Image (tube, rainbow, N blue to C red; front, side, top):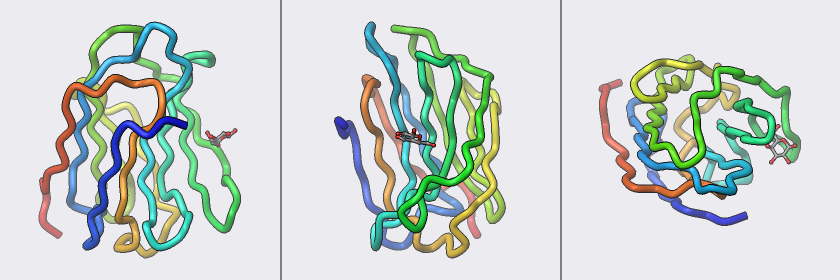
Length: 139
Ligand code: GAL
């Protein structure tokens, strides 16, 4: 596992903060991940995992030491060595995912106490050209 980026926000990232990653995938890309995590324990509130081998985006949560039920998004707009922008933001109900400004999916919160989601990381096969975490909405 190669961590490309990691940031903590002690006051919580959800809801209100918008995460915007611009990047492209390297030639031999297999998969990459964006994980919204709970700093205090090992929970992953939202695991966003494009897999080039399956042309699918796998989404899930890791709680109580287990992966939950996968939600798959077969809308797979990523190409090898093609630049893209991913924006992930959340409200009180869902994470919302936009790729190149088109909404591709939403993911219902499974972690109930949203304030505990305090860390975001980007892992594996992605070359990051810019990354912005901005407060977009006030809650
Ligand atoms: C597993 C994989 C994890 C994660 C999980 C999501 O098979 O090892 O990294 O992607 O699926 O359900």
